[in-house]
Amino acid sequence: MATSIEQRTLSLSDDELAFFHKNGYIGPITVYTPEEMDQLWKQVHRETLDRGHAAYPEVDASVGAPNIFNYDRHLDIDLLAEHVCNQKIVDRVASILGPDLLCWRSEFFPKYPGDEGTDWHQADTFANASGKPQLLWPGESENDFGAGTITVWTAFTDSTRENGCLQIIPGTQNKMNYDETKQMEFDEGRINAEIKDGVPRGFFGYDYRQLQVDPGWKPNEEDAYSLVMKRGQCVIFWSTLMHASLPNVSTGKDYRMGFATRYVPTKVRVYPDTDHIEEYGGSISLDRWGAVLARGADDHGHNRIVTETLRGTPIRTVAAR
Image 1 (cartoon, rainbow, N blue to C red):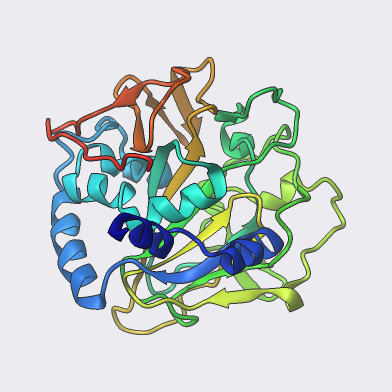
Image 2 (cartoon, helix red, strand yellow; image 1 turned 180 degrees about the vertical axis):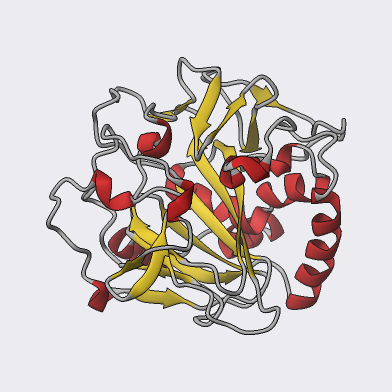
């Protein structure tokens, strides 16, 4: 009986699921207390400085690849490996995707005082920067609109309107306004250099508007909702939901740090027919990459699965009940 009560507590309720399916997101959800997050982030921040075990140690953040430089630190930092399998997260994601889950990517998203906001965007196959699909659902071709991925964005510091919180447009997850088969042009000179509709926005050296299906279309920002979160809280959303972030207009040292973990069912093929990622002005080999079976079982065998971090620590996953 205790297990079933715990299951109901950690899974999304019927009302929460209905809200999610209508709006494309749910949250904020508390995963850690502020004090727990302070301690976690203090240790993780220190460990990120050591790239001796990182999956992509050859990437130099100074030459235009800060985003891929920040990928997948859950593969070498034990606390982040625990975080991607946190039952408060994966049981809720399982309510949406089913019991068997892969965490296929994680990313840090820092925003320091003076940093621009992030362009409005959607992601389905994640070919938006690399030009090659990184996810293929069963029966999906490279030109299909698929289901994307579930992103869980956790606030490692308080996320406010002043320091650049996330924004979403609820209910936009079922229609792609961007064509990921198009190509965006990377230009490091764009970073922190453009104003879009009165707001400093960019996309890590790209202009996401280059992918618009209709070049004259604009998102309806009147429908946007700003996701203010306390450190230790998360939001769960479809990657195909229109989302962006505000610029950090705070003063002093009020930076925002988000950590995104991305989940798909085990039936999805990740990085199909490729051995590297080339985007954001850099290239990384996938030789040390592997998906984490964050919950349940993998009966498909499509993807390389890692069972321990690159430091050799076993990854404790959550069994489906």
